[in-house]
Length: 395
Ligand code: PLP
Image 1 (cartoon, rainbow, N blue to C red):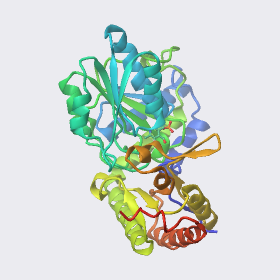
Image 2 (image 1 turned 120 degrees about the horizontal axis):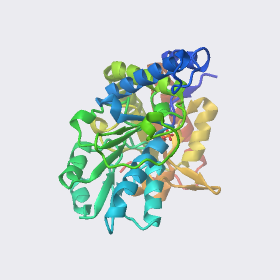
Image 3 (image 1 turned 90 degrees about the vertical axis):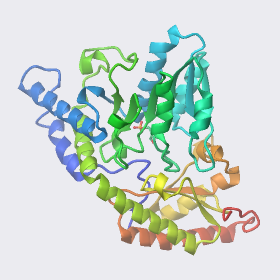
Image 4 (image 1 turned 30 degrees about the vertical axis):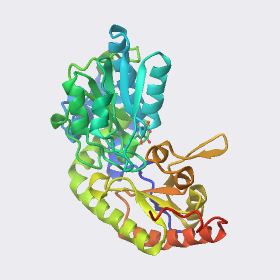
């Protein structure tokens, strides 16, 4: 059976060129980057080249890049690092984030809340954008950190980071952005953005899982979370994951070289998918901002009257991999917090799927998906006792 993978926001395959670049560091070039002999020197040189490659992708200085174990660690380091540096000196310390963040940020902020720091969760608009006016009004004298994601993993909505960061800068507040879904898909340029901290994850941009980076603008008040040896200037100790770091560097280089070509091609395929589904399936609606303010690879679509989980399974049986935004906890399918936050009723949130395209996606695969999805939706709707009575996704 031909298998079509439209779940690249969950994870991407390792690019063959990335695999080729990292393999020697799992065999002949196995040295510890801290060792002074030739083995160590080769590993050290490779890590520093990767630092330059990651820095170049986001227009940072190599010294502003710290390698981590992935997006979750980068977000945790940013949020707890700022809180540790600033909260003890600011009575009533306050943090602002949004209610549509990934759990890596949401649960970090929740933990800060439990430790006595006040947290404001900004609500998004119906399209999933954070309104800069609402954002500005949330700022207090005690605000020490603002953390708003660059692009949403479920909707693909791209935030106005320029304006949101500007508010932080005007008030001398540290600004962190979780750019895990943005880096490698759209141009991210920290040299022209009011951003102090920015999280990157390798496995979202064709490097392996378990490696990431945090951009730390010079002079940002930030305390380290881990204590150990002198690796990465002692700020993030632990023997470097040389192969993973080399892979991230190579993936960053590829992303930088291919950004324009990939984003134009994927946006055209995404538009073809959305257009095709709209004409073939009644009562379906694309969520999030218009194509221009959305990641070029992401479509979030509500199909009235179906259960998203059932549709994911039905499509998987046909050979198409995609996802719901829903998190399955204790046997119950909770509607996605992102879809709930943009105002979708629970039934519509549960009737929503995310299709995320990637570098290997072809036009033939999109055409095949345009056969499979309408067939699976009609089959499930035919079995639904409530459809079309409950349908409202055509609004
Ligand atoms: N932030 C966002 C927006 C994500 O989509 C993800 C992963 O899905 C993460 C953070 C976590 O990254 P990692 O899987 O590298 O820990």
